[in-house]
Amino acid sequence: MTPKEYKELLKAEQTIRKYKAEINTELIKLTSPKTCLKCGKKVEVMDPQEPFYHFYPHEGMWLGGGVFQMSCGYGSDHDNTQFYGALCDDCITELHEKKIIETDSDLTEVKTEYLKKLEKGKIDI
Ligand SMILES: [Zn+2]
Image 1: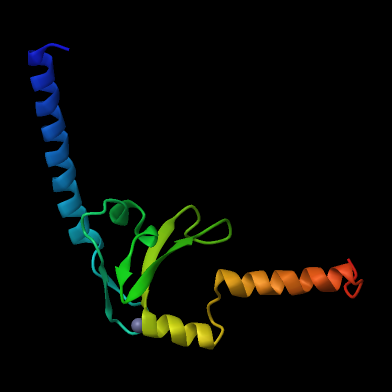
Image 2: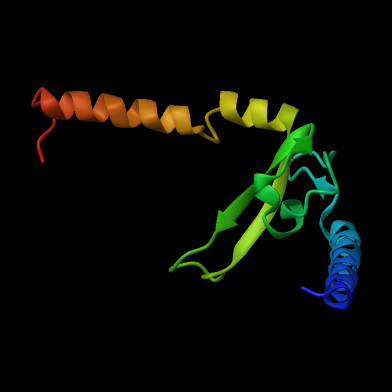
């Protein structure tokens, strides 16, 4: 690579970084903060510099709550649409205690119990 080519490469990298920063700034205005679906409290992005928040908000870190992804499938008027919503920590706790929402562990526990009963022949298929 010649010095001139290297200089052009650096300039191109700076341009790409500048545009990525501008896109992040614009997207964060659209995506944050999220509003808790139940009580209306704000759930804020923890680190606005992380670009994945904007494209996959449910994978990011949020202060005081969480963001989830809801996929609508066949049978829904919203088939093939992904929605993102938020719940604050207090509402997550309340909904979980009332068994309105489940964790992965809850579902694993149910599956494990079912398989144990199935193995013991207590469930007919
Ligand atoms: Zn809430």
